[in-house]
Image 1 (cartoon, rainbow, N blue to C red):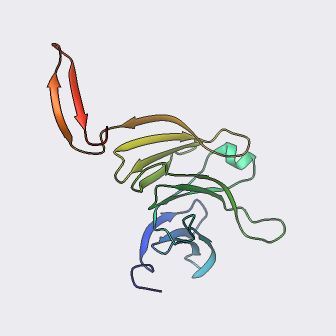
Image 2 (spheres, one colour; image 1 turned 45 degrees about the horizontal axis):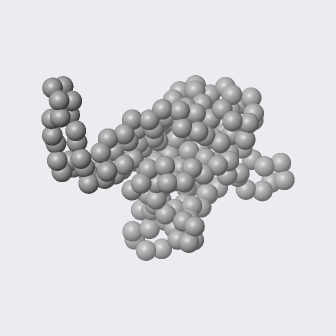
Length: 176
């Protein structure tokens, strides 16, 4: 691998003892048992054109509803702004892990940080360039997420600011 694609770009402690998730610039996420020094498995992430995409953030879900459905979700933030949700539970047939859903282009310019709220089916995400904080809830039967709340600002500096009336402010930015 080239030096820039083999870089570690994200680390996250797993709820499982002695296990971490390692995100790479190559688009791979490796789960590693630190005590035994063993790579458990890997998850590959690519763009629709099959190019590797940088992993920017990782977060494990720990709420009771996930356990009731026998799933162990891992959210993966990517440099293309997409969030992938994986079920890390082993398959009965011994196959790979299941991709529960992909939320395309959630944050234009890339995902900066993901964080599942403790003991809740809620995922907080922030964008690298989108100047937004989004709260996603995972309450659908198919385990997909939907936007619950959002806070967004301008993506570009304001170009013009005018006072229209006392107490009213009009802002025009390059991003509309």
